[in-house]
Image 1 (cartoon, rainbow, N blue to C red):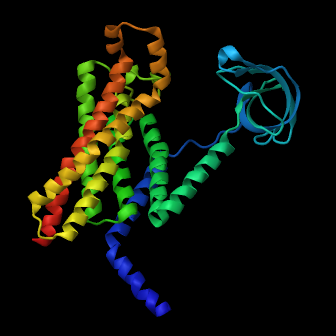
Image 2: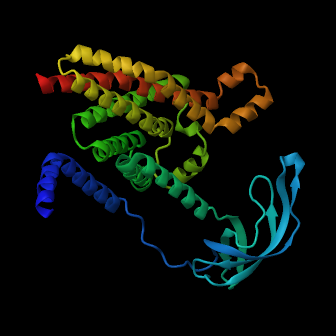
Image 3: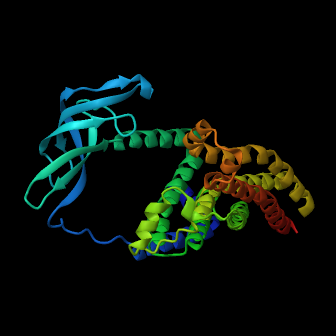
Length: 391
């Protein structure tokens, strides 16, 4: 059995040597970026007044005056008196009495014995400690939801599903561990976002399909489509005279910049839409590239024009649903605000000229244009590479 496995391993290494090289270089680049952007070393507990957020468990509900309010869609109102046991931090193992826990429709829910909570523990210079419930602890629920997603993906997708999860974890790690620290260090927003998106596309396609013609075509199509989305987003925001300073939470980031953090705000609008478009563009590019490889395998005699025409025919069937997906994703993200604006019955001229409408329209349209134009670009690249292979 060992003699049979060795040639297989050797053949696999020979076939995937370029894929392995790309992944090794990508890992080295990721490690170098993490070292450059490493967080500051943990500081000792400060002297004087300070606050910490720690996990805890409700050990008893001593009193509760909560009730459902029909006027608030049966949300809970009232207060509770609880005892909680701290599970993390310097006060782990201690039990505290928490009084007058305010329950209201917008910020909290009534708690039961055994529920996890997040505490804000304020320590004062005179030795006094104050404990308040900040939020219900949702960490366990989120882990369970993610576990179900991973399980379903692996059961249905098998090896490909497992590879897709690896690519997903890599994508999240790049955004959280590389892109965000880069922006906080003052790297130009659009340059940083585009570079990280290219990195994600290259590594994800290499993980999913190896460094072969199909994956290379999808990579090039993704980069081209993402670049088009970025360029059109810049043009649209210039024409509409909106930028990252008009998006949600921009005020908090502006205050952060004014205190010395060199984060670039004006590119946040286009940077966000590029990240949102990346998944759809990657999906379209891989679908077109994979389909054309199958078409070429079935009929190697097809030339560049015929392959390109086949790619366009396949891509046209994808345009309608993918465009709806992007537009609905952007509108769904702001559905609550849309309903609120509708309830105000605003003047149509004022509504259409509002920054909110402009931002949502620019985000949805720019992402859709990048995705749509990725179809002919990927089809052309695939047809050219596949044609050269047989020439």
